[in-house]
Amino acid sequence: MCQSAQCSQCTSHSFPTGECLQATGGYSAIAQCTATELIVTIYTTSANCTGASTPSAMPLNQCLQAQGGGYLENLCSASSAPTGSKRNLKMTKSVARQIAALRK
Image (cartoon, rainbow, N blue to C red):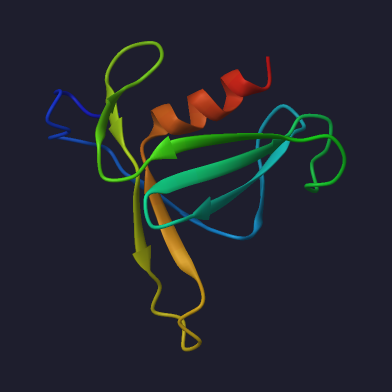
């Protein structure tokens, strides 16, 4: 969550992309980065990224107003993994809340 519309004073969190991420509530998600978007696919009935899913795209490198107040910015950066194929997604807690909202 960021305190201002310029996305300053943010609390950030990093998540791997291309991997199944378990979330509280029994659902799961896979995050992918393109050159311009964060695409999060939510698996609403599965904790292991199988079955019915709903994709959602959000722009990268832009300060966005978050649902429930505050602001967020989605950033993707190359990982230090030797293969160079993985990327880390840095996002605020409010992105996780938005992901949860997709489930409803």
